[in-house]
Image (cartoon, rainbow over all chains, first blue to last red; front, side):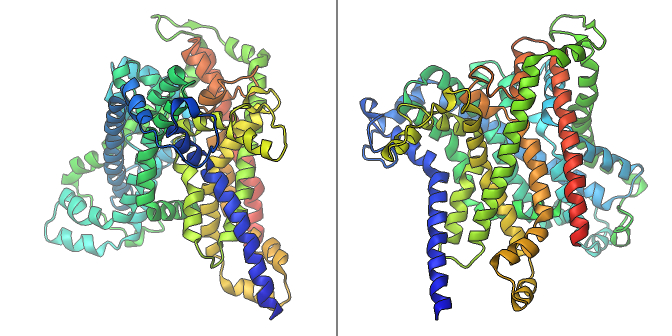
Length: 276
Length: 303
């Protein structure tokens, strides 16, 4: 009997710990929403974390102050490009590494893996120069192409393809199915779980990315949402209510995608982390 | 490596399909070689030149950039600042993430809601995070000092203070990483066979014993993964510094990533910037090896 009682007291402590932690975790968002809804004169007045005013004009003013629609459009193009190419190219390469025999396969795969150890900081300057020499500076190509393949994604796809039995493919081969049809009609649909994980992670990476778009774009027309937000901070930093509305624009897409697909995110992270 | 799985492997590649194979691999090969492998060599090459990136000729200067780096007090400061930042972020987010994972690894009500709330900072763009926390840290009107004020605590100057700024920025880095550590640890905790814990309980182990002698050793691979990924990520921090402090006050948060950015894209010293990039590479490589050996040995002992 005393065992049961101490158990529930323990749970109360656990809950207090978890609730305080969760509060700290989302406190910045409470503040953002509250501040973005306050009329200009009242930003510093309490309450700070629970909206009592609903001054939506801030959102309109922030939206019109700089071309946010353009920034979001640019980020969307960049994210779509990265998601589509990265998933397709990585799946194709992962399949070749898993199922096709060719010369120097192991050597090539090891070279791929080694490039994962080269930090982004080292790649930044040479890639900037390469993009300039190719005449891609300040274009969507510059934003998409260098990130159109991910070694980590190739690795995940390869592991998955190794795990599917070859009998399916063998029977397709016997019926005269070409490599392309086999891959796109039979193999790729089987790899849906890896594909979904990769689509979600590459989208999030692309949408939240900052440093590469910052150095590789120049004109107002090509700014992505994160670069645009940082520019907005520079110009309207003292207008807290506008800046918090603008910050919400940049967070919302990531947040919505995450909340809709949270199960896949968390499963994806758990499995990729454990496989290391 | 592929030999082991060779038994179940079909060799779908016929001679007439050389073309198909090429199409499967060529996009990856081109992009990986041009944008991932080549930069490592080119950075090394550039580090021996003085070049602004525009003028047609690069001036060969031998080891001059390396000698300059050796004497540069700004660079030395950046290395120390970055080591402190990445250690704080990596280890504190692991400890807090583990505590939360241990608390959530029970049949509590609202478990998935908590997991969601803790994970939201992980998916939040770092630019947005930096901007938001900058305002939360505001010494006069910021939420943090106002909350401290309710408890009659005089909050510090946070980002404006040379002694608090680095710690403040680290708080944001930790806040953004806790959810990731929690998810990794939670998955590892759920993989621990119940029979291990039950057997130990029968032998009279208490909660601490269960944690110290069963859970902690079995979590070692996850911890190693979190240490290595944590250092790789936090050692190259840029967005948070760019949005919150610009490296200041007086270099207190001038991390290597930010110093590298300044030399490359503000002062246009591509040669010197390449040396900084290579220093980041060498330190990260060295740290990964040490951590691998140190914890890797532990994994073997357990298994």
